[in-house]
Length: 429
Image 1 (cartoon, helix red, strand yellow):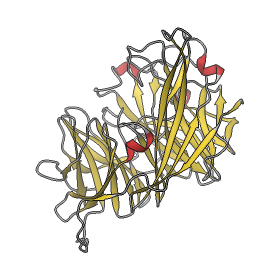
Image 2 (tube, one colour; image 1 turned 60 degrees about the vertical axis):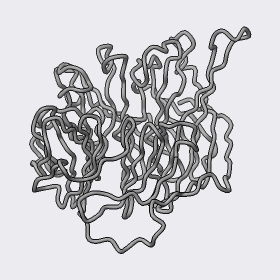
Image 3 (cartoon, helix red, strand yellow; image 1 turned 180 degrees about the vertical axis):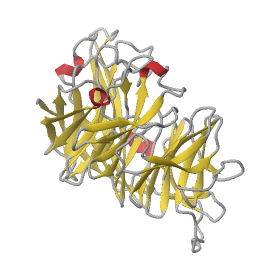
């Protein structure tokens, strides 16, 4: 393993932003609301609706729920009595409270993106009192004649948002080192353009990394083939965010930060398990032999003694790809997988779900309808079961209840019926 260090700057902000309340009057005692929330997308508009149960009944977004502010997308976090919606495209972070009408009221709002230098920040719940908001600011370095870009300085900007008060308390800046592995093979090299999917394990926080080829500006991120041959993760001491380090593994290749679903989880032993995402200009680049794997990280480094090759274990005739997974507990997880032979990875019914056991290194493709899970965000564990939505494009949609104790390909049942057709369900909370 190789380790790289760079400088860290922590800035304590006396006042960066003040929370702007939607209503200055005292908040009345809320009436009883539903237990769950479901996020749906209809013609690029995002809606959030309440559900009493995930295992039975019917839920429709027609004349129901609340349309969310979503310039490009809405990312949802559930914490305590509130949900937090990040408007990906404006950077606005809105605190939502369920009301008695099946929808949600905006309680508070701040511009979280402004603090990290973008209108498209990423965010993650750190603990019940803190949301981390972050972005990588890329500054080009030109040659002596100021005509060509010869390098990039990539600075992570990370802020902590206290909840439920929704106040910003601190800012960390860190220049991300560029490893020789990431830079090889391109005109200038690949530079870190995004961090995401952070998890906290003990006194370390791990951020997945996505790299971008600066020699190909015509293809938008994140759809560019990473030429680096390994995996990279950014690690800090926690909670100080000091001693920033890039750790590397040659177990596989690709991005490590996931897309919308989380790429990393911490198990009951305090170990981190990470899936890779290998993608190129118009599809998962799997034909060259790249594989989907789970790696283990512990004590601030990759654990070379562990590797779970999902592609090999499933043994399917088609190549598979993944960009996130969900952990249930006791080594059991559920991973949305892309089946390359079924067609395009986005906007098509080319995905299914595999149940995986990270301890015993077993995996089985479940007998679910194919659907589009490229941008699926969230599933939840409740009463020992795992719940996520499967919404085939043009087909019938349901929340499915998965039984972790089941060993076969049919260890699930249909639950809450959802709108089908052009409604894409992106998460349950």
